[in-house]
Length: 290
Ligand code: MN
Image: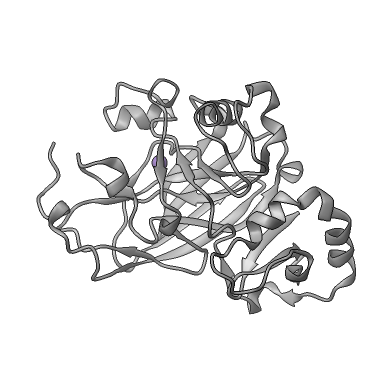
C-alpha cells in the first residue's frame, strides 16, 4: 500500500492514479497540531487493514494530480541519519570512519518538507550546500533492542529522503537542520510491497544531470543493522524515520535548479531549489575550513 499525507494533513491511500481519503479511519482531526495522524495510522495499521482495504476498493478517490501531497510523516519523534554508510561516499569525503563504527546523528522533524515544497537555501556566504540521495526507512512500532534478525517486526515501509547539508566543520546537526533540509516523500510504500530492501537502486539528478546512482546492496550497515544499532540506544516509535546514508556523487545545489530523486519500487519526486533570506546568523559567515 502507498500512504500519503495531503491537502493539509489529510491521510490517503494511492490507488492507481487516485488518492482515496482514509482520514476518518484514524482517530485524528485534519489540521490538528501536532500533526500525528500518520503516526497513529502506522501504529494501528494492522488492525485497520480490513477497513483500509475496503476503503481503497469502495471509495471514489481524487486524481493524484489534483491534490497537494505533503511530507508523509510530518511529526516523527526523531529522524535518525547514518553518515558514511557507503564506502565510496566516505572515501570521496576523506572519512576514515564508517557508520558501523561511528554511529548516527539526528535531524530535527522541523527540517522535513514534502514533494511539493522547495528546498530553501539559507544565506550562507558562499558555503556549498549539497544534496544527499537516501533511502528513508519508516518505523512501524515501538521497539527497543531489536536483534538484526527481527528487523522486519519494526520496519513499516520506505520512502525517499534527501539529506541536505552545508559543508564545513561546524557541528553536523547545525549544518543539516535548516527548515526544508530533509525533503521526504512522495509517499510511504509499505514493506510488503517493497520486499527485500538490500537491492534497491537509488538515483538523484540535478536538473538533467545524473549525480548519484547507487544500490543499497553497497550499504556498510544494512537496514537490519541500522535498526539494530539505533534501537540498542533508544526506543523507536511509529513514524520514526531512518535516513540510510548517501552514496557517492554528492554535489552542490543552487537557486533555480531542480533535484529529482528516485528509488526502485518506491517512486520519484522532483523538487525546486530556491534561495531564501533566512539563516543570516554568523555561524556560517566564514568560508568552510579545509
Ligand atoms: Mn546523509
